Length: 114
Image (cartoon, rainbow, N blue to C red; front, side, top):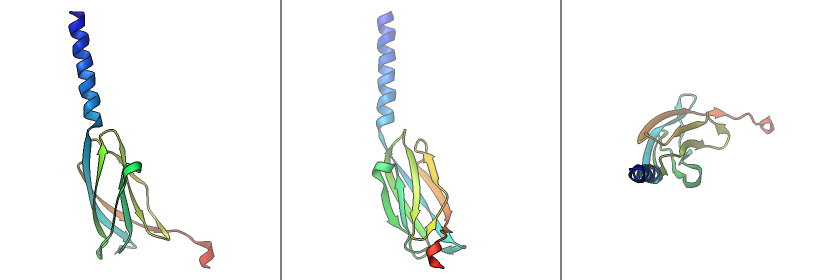
């Protein structure tokens, strides 16, 4: 009886470990703006740090991007535009098949621009 319980517990642990290693896809779409105007040509990066996908915003500041990841990973969305920054966007990959974001960029103060 004890051997049967141990076997079932090991099998359950194996199934849990296998499901956490399975790859999933998440799609993110959104708009990038500065002072309520669309930002054209900004680089958008999305995914876990080691496997980021990239795209650029269109003429309306919109983007759609997908990344493949494991369920246990943390996903990060970044917008790169020289002279600008934004709030950090991170969320758990588990249960995140689709997300939508409106990102407002902030100008970085450049003392050399005086």
